[in-house]
Amino acid sequence: MQLFIEETYEDMSRRAADLIAAQLIVDPASTLGLATGSTPIGLYADLVEDFQADRISFEQVTTFNLDEYRGLSPEHDQSYRYFMQKNLFDHVDIDPEATSVPDGANPDAQAACESYEQAISEAGGIDLQLLGLGHNGHIGFNEPCDHFPVRTHEVALTESTRRANARFFAGEDEVPTAAYTMGVGTVMAARRVLMIVTGADKADILHRAFCGPVTPWVPASILQFHPDVTLICDEAAWSGMKA
Ligand code: F6R
Image (cartoon, rainbow, N blue to C red; front, side, top):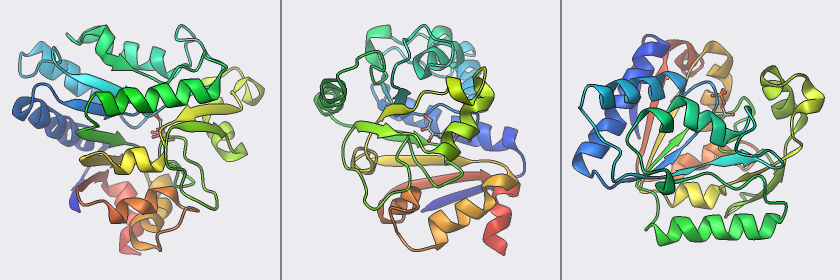
């Protein structure tokens, strides 16, 4: 594993943006796996800045997002599609047709998930997968459970995840109860994985993910088996590793 411990959130974001920019310079037609949440907001802002400064282009890039709430349309301001438009896609030269987010508006879970998995495979797989880390160790919406779900699937969100995400909705009751997410196997098939982690509140789970046993009860722990993982965190998140 490659490790970068940065002093601040801003430094972490810049380091991660540099790594993605380098990927696009080496292979302008890269396929990126993308994440939502609070953690990558700074990184996306930095990539927009790099694009505006003519350092990178997304013209030939293809993207697949990790997950989407089931039942939210792309126009819903808490959908992950909306998040991606506002934080990245609307500000760069990416072909809208080359951006994919699981279709949360499709009530047919099996069709939505199978076609997503197929699209990833037709694109030749993911070159670089960006991940955040959930407080309970989830990656994408792969919640702790007794096995590692392999492919894109529907998942019931745990109470802790719904509570954590309630801050973005009018109340906890408004948070969808299910999502479509890439499976752990889909993530593990990416050629490179980039995880970014920030804040003291993630210190304990970061330690469990990379220093504890590999277990589906901490889904991110599977990354210990991935041959090409880069972890970029700030010092606050790293503080649990020194314990
Ligand atoms: C979102 C996603 C989630 C988040 C995780 C951390 O697409 O895949 O696994 O990465 O919930 O979220 P934040 O960054 O808000 O702490």
